[in-house]
Length: 114
Length: 413
Figure 1 (cartoon, each protein chain N blue to C red):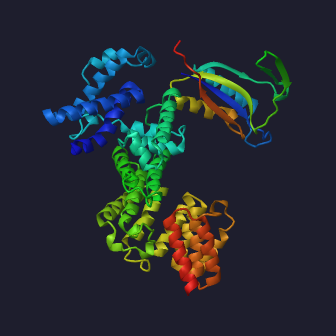
Figure 2 (tube, each protein chain N blue to C red):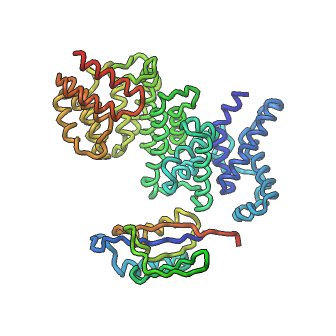
Figure 3 (cartoon, rainbow over the protein chains, first blue to last red):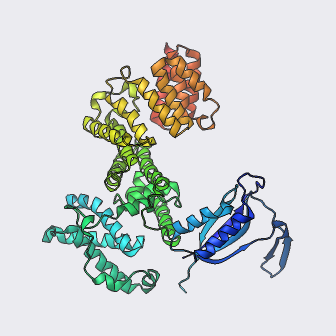
């Protein structure tokens, strides 16, 4: 069963609990070595984001942003393949992004029986 | 017939748990459990109860499941882990997993942890337990919670869908996870109990007694986890509080406070059982929140009246509880006990210290306790103001009626 771990970075950057690059590297290595890694990316800063919408008449609108409206910003993701939600939650809890005011949203990847 | 149905209430949860274990799918397990129970209700009154009723139900349910999976290829494919062929073989439970009364292994502990999984909404966990483990139908659960059947059905369907689609496992957490997961299970059972009490003054006398369902669930859990002292503590607490049920309300449904209750109407047998469990709960390790609350309830239950209650001991237990659960509500209860031990002035001083707590703002037990202590100190105008404030905050009509009587008493003096 595949789960996406959506990593919401905390905004409290100077938190004592904030994690280091080494933490992230160790976690990434652990996910890969456990054989559960499917994919994963870290996203560039939110100021580089652009939003596209297409209206009913096919007109494209491109805007800068979005800017963070909530306190948490999607900073990256992992897709892991594990037997059940408990195992997925364990991996989420180990992720450095879960600390320092951040959070991980765990979502099952829809399975259309293909 | 009714007797057979009563037997099924408990047997049903057991059967369901075994089938969930077998098939890994709650919906399918529920469906074939109902089929098997229906078949038993049809055959047993005529042909007699089979020598191994559990195995009979299990075999019948398994056959129904196999039929169902033959018809529904999509479901069969989804349950890829299921090996239909293997199901045709005789079901052989491990020898140590069943006792004389039951011939099906007990898999209910898994189901307790699934129903109380932290990934499910807290308000649905109790309902799921009643549905899956207490053997209640959805309309019965809805009636018990005083919500429309449609509303409850939606909540249960949504929770089951999450279990299935997010794949919340049917498993007992390992020893290392148990301290983190068990409190959730206990909390779900306790919330069923308190829900039963909160709504016990409701107009619908036909509704199921949630407090008794909670006690039933706690008993099952106690049998499944005999070494967990907090499970003993929870069962003790429920019994020791429920023992006062007949004296808790007056003829008009109004609440009768502890000091005015007719203690001869307390259930002595239930108190004895609860008190024995308190000893278990508080022996052999650090105390837990349910064990300590049960010990406090036991002190009340064993006292002849309010004056001879062992208040120093009650305060000491609240000190322990406050260390385990430093919440303003516990502090409020401690202040009330201090007022009994050292007099209303001491209690009131503690209450005033809590005045800034956000959780106690507009919390009517706090306002009522403050009014009561002002009244006892003879500060009548202040007591009247405080009773009015409590009246504004109080929820249920019987509680309001009680506060109105107290207010009238102050004004008449």
